[in-house]
Length: 345
Image (cartoon, rainbow, N blue to C red):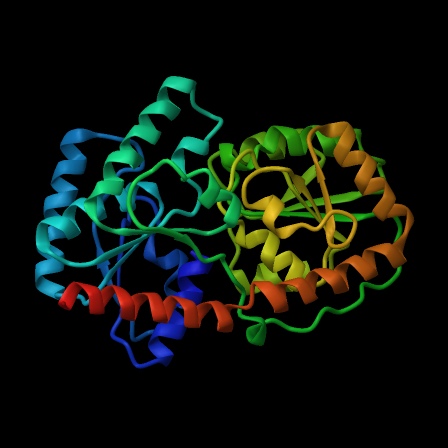
């Protein structure tokens, strides 16, 4: 939702009319309404997370009806399920579409090989709909090389103008370790719990967020869980931490890591698609593959506050140079204009 908040803020500022079609089954509006510009029209459309042919068919027909009513110049789709239903509906109605992947479904590791093959096959077929597919990292784009259609990458970004400058944390014992994001299978909370359990008692662990696997983390009794908090609250807490740990099993390009880097934190994360595009090993953080690797890198940071500070400065600078939403937003506006222009020819 953070990425959509950033995009829509810039679109509204440019004078565009924006409608946000969302599924209340997955994202209740009370969770994000206050983060959005009040001029954005919210349009509910019930879509289940899992594949259900009957339900998905009905959702596709309803979306086609909504598109006929709104008559948008372009439809920007986010995530696999919306991308599938939306690309079909857009093709039926004749609306140009852009699909932002946010982590391809066939990269998931919580499903078996047959399911991943099915997801890849579906993406291959949907690549024939004529929509432009935009990966959110270069490594994700490389994973799509055999999928047909127009493809490109525009990385996720952060609006640094709305973030406070990093504040050096006062001296304290141990290491203040933060994790951030919805607690789901994707974030691999079991690995996070194992790392925390093996860490020194003086290290403090906090997970900013909640989710369906929240109990797994709470039961570890080593990681405090805040539950769902606003983005403003999460950003404020990032200002006071020492390091972020990100244990995800698959990604596109995680906003949580970008926000931590923008807050001046070094990051230790798994070496997966998206994460590896953000972290420069030894400069802005480290990548690791298991508990031993994470603890090895975290111990380096725990022993050297000056290294944490140096990496934090480098991390924020990298976001400013490579992942600044103001610059990336212009690329999105250009893509919208090109997409609409091609459609009208």
